Length: 239
Figure 1 (cartoon, rainbow, N blue to C red):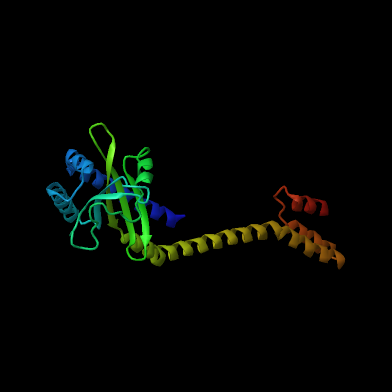
Figure 2 (tube, helix red, strand yellow; figure 1 turned 90 degrees about the horizontal axis):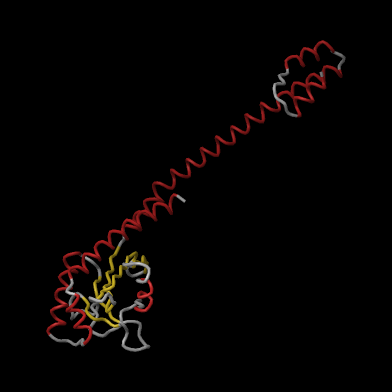
């Protein structure tokens, strides 16, 4: 439980921070220019201007990926790249009209009906842990015409998990063992105290069997019957 609580706090902190960052990025965009370009997208001067501005935002904030998508051109794809930041000559940079991997435009539109910004924490063998944050780009009428996507590597989540396993978890286990030990000792002393009168009556019975009535009475007088349980009732009847 403690482990999952730590994970939840860390993830929520990172998520809230990325939501604020994404909101800031949307404010830096010229939405009217993006909407005009989305209506007639081509590799023209506007495209290279927007791509350069988005790349500047990427470099200034040190994100892994920062790109803008629109609705898919047809049913065979789930999205269509409008502008991707980065080096356009690199294979890691999407070109105009390409389909972004692991990106469902229709799914995100559904999420935006309930939240202003949607986040998703994922893990891959190539990237490790990374957080994807999505924000809608709306026109003056409030309609969504594109989506801003930001991917950020968050390897420190794994570091926190490993640190927990190495340092915190052993302490938690030791505390659990100590608590269990104290509980067992408490039960032992309680049972020993509760059963002590029976031992006294057993010794008294031995004296009676041997005909030593005085010793039996002396032993019984030493038995403390302060409780109101069955043992006390039996002891009182015995005397």
